[in-house]
Length: 132
Length: 179
Image 1: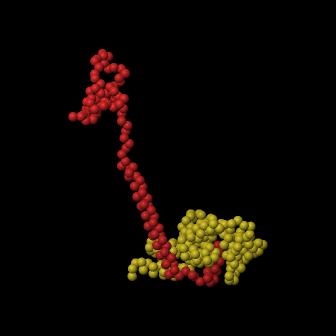
Image 2: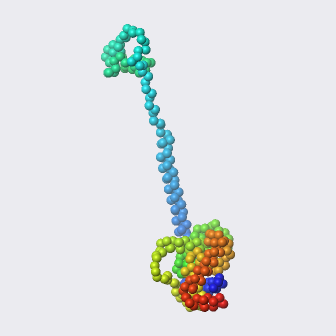
Image 3: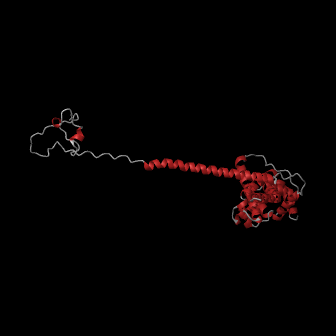
């Protein structure tokens, strides 16, 4: 048996009547239109899904871009080391702040005699308004 | 007449002219009329979707043959994956409804047992009368692969014939050589 026998077999089969063709041109046309509609719907659905994904991603990404950075910790206030006196020569003790403050305004508790953190701060801003 | 109506009319005309021939090619590939009709329908629907991109009639024929062949091969892969069951019983062979010369009937029955890709190569080469290069284009493989598929297909066909008809194989095949 060779390829010629095979071709003759195919030709013989072709001469035999087959079952009637159930496919009609109109039915195939309808099936094609349905397939085209399905394909377009799928494309549109995919596009909407991608668009939603992009919008969600943008919404998640944008607040992060505009968020203010965490405030850096303030540097420790520079306080003079009181354990070692800057001036070895003892001077006359100055009146304490509680004594210098006007009556009715008390310094913060537990810090008698301590200097304010900022030497430039005025007493009124540090200690509140004075009584007239 | 709108462009869409013109396109549909052209498609309808083409289906009326070519559906029967394509169904027969699918029948040679699949081995039964029912599957052949399913393959043909799938192929024409795919053709409709691509109709606007194809302008010449010979291109349409080539495109449709390619769709039919690849749809058949894809279906075979899918059904093999889903339906293959190991069994010790011999496979069923479709019965021929009409009388046919004995040798050709034997060849047709044996062809059903040839693996799908080899069968597709044989049908494209010896029924559609394609060149090796055209068959390679349709099957999506190299020219050498088509040649080997055809040679293996014929070998498989001979082996199946020998298995089916046993001791008479040599006599029938020898007689068949003088058809």
